[in-house]
Every structure is written in structure tokens, then in C-alpha cells.
Image (tube, rainbow over all chains, first blue to last red; front, side, top):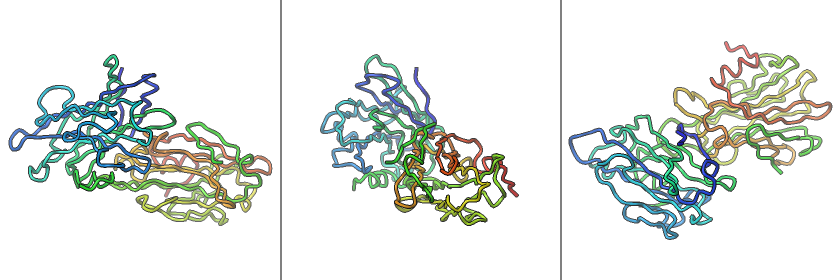
Amino acid sequence: MALSLQKGGNLSLDKVAPGLVEIMVGLGWDPRATDGAEFDLDASAFMLGANGKVTAESDFIFYNQKESVCKSVIHTGDNRTGAGDGDDESLVINLPKVPAHVEKIVFTVTIHDADARRQNFGQVGGAFIRVVNQQGGAELVRFDLAEDYATETAMEFAELYRHGGEWKFRAVGQGYAGGLKAMCARYGLNL
Amino acid sequence: MAVSLSKGGNVSLSKEAPGLTEVVVGLAWDARSTDGAEFDLDASVFVVGESGKVLNDGSFIFYNNKKSPCGNVEHMGDNRSGAGDGDDEQVNVKLSGLAADVKRLVFAVTIHEAEARKQSFGQVSNAAIRVLNKADGKELARFDLSEDSALETAMVFGELYRNGDEWKFKAIGQGFAGGLGPLASSYGVNLG
């Protein structure tokens, strides 16, 4: 039975699912605008070290770089319109395979070509992130974004992080008005 | 060796630092890197007597009342964003100078305008409050706000209390709904 997190809240995945190995992190949304350019939202993940930055460009997992070097994080593919119910994009994480130096994996969503298309997250509704136990398919935790992020074009939905020997999940829901570029810079990636 | 406390944890300062005379309560957090209102955390201290209430209105030490009447409790200044390394706010307490009627010192941390800004400690990165022995800079106790007070907006961290000749520290780590105003009122502060 999934726990619904509030913004800022956290949960121990190892406690709710002892022996957890593989999870699917699913992101979904309903674009609200109907005319104009397609809403192409892209899920991605940043694998961060203790200093809160990536170690290499290969630590940024997205539609053009779908697998981490260690194969512990795999992006399952690009959805360019948001069509379809449920998860629009997802990443599969094999927890024991995540390299020891990776302390945190941040799950983010960006609007492709946001500036050119004049789109922002204020136009996106029903956004959520959830974690599913691949073994058995149970939904472990969910975070529904409720606010209107009208100035942001890149968003951190949630993060998976190590704490006290466990894997924990935190609902973030914070964005960057500066978009993908600002977000990447924050994580040590110069685009 | 610092004791890292989780909710309800406890530490005996007399064991950690015998003969303790002065402490610094340090509050630290990362400045916001995402979009939105700054995270403005505020440290405060209630100098409490036998009644469980402050001895006088001047005994509520916070950013707008930085020094206790006796001068032994001093807030070193308001940090409104968390910018800067190390402790972002500090309160100095000279335990040895405190009058006999001071029974407890209660330390609290609140988020300024939490309700209006819709913020809680879990949204802030690396927020923590700690007690240091001023004499040698050693950290005696610490509480991870981001992790363990995720949905709170105001928190009573712990209290220093007299035990005969010594001062001991009891960790409380309990959230308080309503913010600094109601928290201060609960310790008997008259807010004008």
C-alpha cells in the first residue's frame, strides 16, 4: 500500500520493502494546453557523489544516454507528447548495483525546447512521481505535485538517497526558472 | 565525539564535556539553489525559570532581541538565506555567568514565514542544529532537521538544564505547529 508523501517528506524504501533490489521510478503528467507546440516532457536522473555533483557526464541519464555505465540506472524511453495513462516516462534502478560513490540520484523533468515553445510547468497538471517494487509490482511511495510552477521549466521531482545504510526517497518538487541549463550547472554538468 | 540525535535522542553533556562553561548553538543550512522564496531559518533561545516560563521578556533571545539582560546569552545575527559556509546563525551562551534562577535554556529553530512560503525543514538542504563546546569547538550534539523534521516548520531542538553544579543537555527534537509566535507564547513571552 503506497504512502503518499508531502513535499519535503522522506521515507525509507528499505523499511517499507525489506530486501528491495529493483525499483521502477515512474513519472507522469497531463499537459493542459491543447493548441500550439507539443508538450514534450523529459524525465532524467543525475547520479551524484557526496559533494552533490556528478562525477562524469555519464552520470546524467536521459533519453540520449539511457544507461548508466554501471547499468544500475536505465531510462526506458522518450515519450514526446504525454500520450497514454499512468507513467509517461520511467527509469529502472537496480539498487545494489548503484556504485558506492553515488550518494544520491535526483529525478528531474524538463520541458523540451521550453523557451522556444514558451512553455512552463504552470501549464502542466497532474504531475506525479512514484516508486514501484519491480518484484511483485507494488507501488511503494508516491508524490503528487500540487502547486503551479509557472516560472519553472526544469523540475526536481524527488531524490533517492543513502542514509544510515538504507535507501530513502524524498519528495522535492522544486524547480529552476533557468531551466535545464541552470539545473545541470547545479549538478556540475556544463552543457 | 558529537552525538547525532534523531527524534527523542539524548546526550549527557556532563559526560561529553565535564566542566562545561560556555556553549555555542549553531544553525546551518544550504542556501536555496532552486527557484522560489529563500529559506530563512531562525535560531532562538528561551531562558527559563522554575515556572517553566521565561524570567522576563528580555529572556527570549532571537534576531530582534540579540542579547539577554544579563549579557550571557547572545545571538550573533540573522542569516536570511543560509549563504556562507559553516554555521549560518549562532547563539553564544555563557553558562557560568547565568543567575541561579535560570533553570533551563530552551533552543528552538523556526522557518521565517513558513506558512506563507509553504516551506518545511524537509525542503531545505542540509539543515542542522548543533551544540558546541566553546572552549574547544567540539560538537556535543547535533540534530538533522532536513531528515528528521521534514514536515515541521518550527522545532524545539533541546534544552540545557541545571543538575546540581552541572549543566546537562536534553534533546527534544519535537516539532511545534504555528511558528515562532505561538512557540514564544508557550514559554510565557508577551508578544506586543
